Length: 92
Image 1 (tube, rainbow, N blue to C red):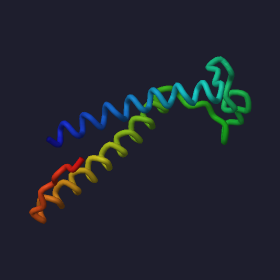
Image 2 (image 1 turned 120 degrees about the horizontal axis):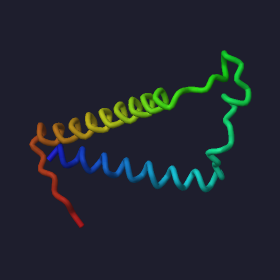
Image 3 (image 1 turned 45 degrees about the vertical axis):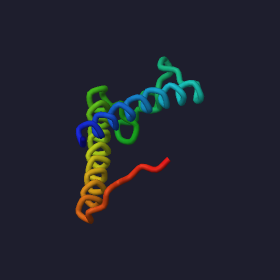
């Protein structure tokens, strides 16, 4: 049951990431060919271009922490209901 919740959450997060990313790219008129301030103002201290590997690693860590947090909260809520002997009934 929990595996299905985690899998469903991962699918929803991935879909939301892709859809919202495309929406923001169109809304903000992003252009991949335009250089960033890290390239144009490279001063070696505050503005330094990062490698694609570093950016991918940071994004991966952020997504991992968010997933673990959501999984922990889901398990906590499910266990609390079982510990109190409550039965969850869905009402329409």
